[in-house]
Image 1 (tube, one colour):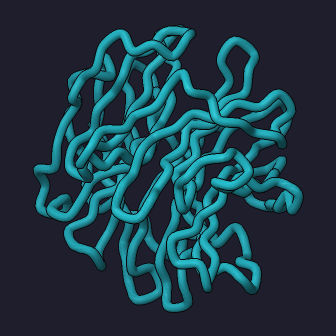
Image 2 (cartoon, rainbow, N blue to C red; image 1 turned 180 degrees about the vertical axis):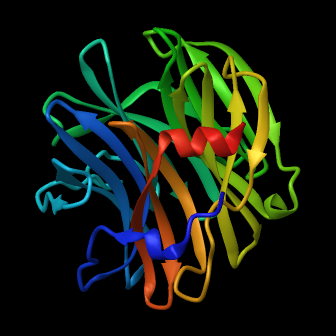
Length: 281
């Protein structure tokens, strides 16, 4: 299975001060869809803030100009916030996000009562000296709560947590092994289709070549890598990375960041679930 670039749709337009839209996170919220993402500013190299946009059909999007989360607004010392992952737990709103500071990276937890005013929640944090934590992803497995993330760019882990965000156990799931994973793997996004879970994740062979791979599991612990480089790339789509996947009405809707000649944008495509499963068997 190779997804042709002709099937990719650019979903948002960058404003004049931004050169990068990154890290999409798609969620269904009541009768609409919300896309959380990160934005970098042209003259602030390390800075990144979280924005969002709304849609009713997954193709036409309206940016919420009043929504912004940055390190200053949550009173955090980092330079930028990347890879946001929104979820609800016990009717409360949360975002896990990667907080970058120079060459360091940790995972922090935010909470909000109204979806606009966010504050730091100290109950969960992934931070260790000389360890890079990236791209958190929350998944509810029939009321078993898991946080997936990448460690040191080459290993994907999951923490099983309770409702108080206390870690019950930590599992190493897999590490870089394919030739297109030599530089890094990160940014897991998981969807359950029939009796299997499918993880879409970023895989880079070097610092200028990135794509998306897929792994499969029955229990979220033992994973088998089944696809690599699912997108065709060319000069207009030099890197495709950070997938966010949702299944709606017999389709897989895949959101991602991609690098082109003018910067980084957010793209979208969809696949028939039946066709994806046929190609995965």
